[in-house]
Image (tube, rainbow, N blue to C red):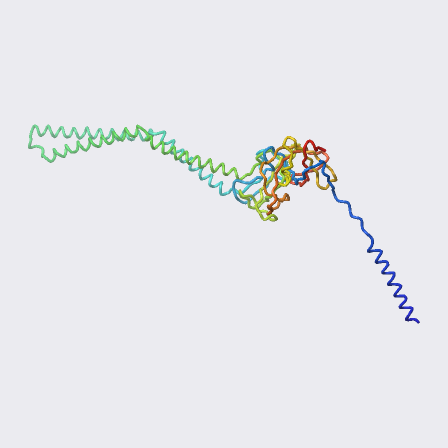
Length: 366
């Protein structure tokens, strides 16, 4: 009897558990409302992915690359900072280039000093020495001629008083003295004339080459301080003190590719959207003078921003990932279309933000 009561109790418990389980698992949890829902504001609008950029009439964000390679020694700006044209952004180690510039400067100064020396010739002291040498040669010539004249007179009075050898030695001394005088006179004339014109031209060419080398390396030295090419905002900094930067950019740890050292943009009241329209939808695109577009910010329900058509880039390109990743290896191609919009005062948007763009025509305007 007791055993039957136990079995009956277990059966009742099982029935209760089964009913409770059926009730619990039959309950349906209502789905959460989507974070944001955007609808097509046009009757037959064309959807396109878009990315916000700094507004520029002929381009996009400004990617900055250094002209030289080396280790970064200082970063002088911060992200979000507004800088004027010419503001130093970051510096690269320039110790070696400084030495090269100093050497070129010394070579240029030495070449200029030699050129000025050639242009200043004849040097007064050098000319005086040449003139004294000519006077000495002239005096020696007069002396030798006087000696020869005395010997000739002695021979005329008494032919046996002077030997033939003495007479010939006197004549040779006169010839030697005359030759020495001619050399001294020519040397004086050459010294007085100054430097040869071709020597001056050659030295001028050497000086110009040294000067240009100095100027070229000085200009290159200036490139070791990277400056802002325009007035704008610092959107992104990819370099840090101690990192290596080159004209190819800086290596990205996460992207595993080369990235620009800095990215600049302009926030002067307007920004632009680069929309990528699928090639399948391109035939349905309205004429440029009839294009109307609306942008929706992701994360906000039906919050739209009117867009102003700027231009179409008339070349269909492979579709890319807009999230700053590598190029997608797909067959889909898209047509880039650029719009601009006035930055809303009650909305925060940044370059690089992904948005939804609907494109329509005047006939289908919302």
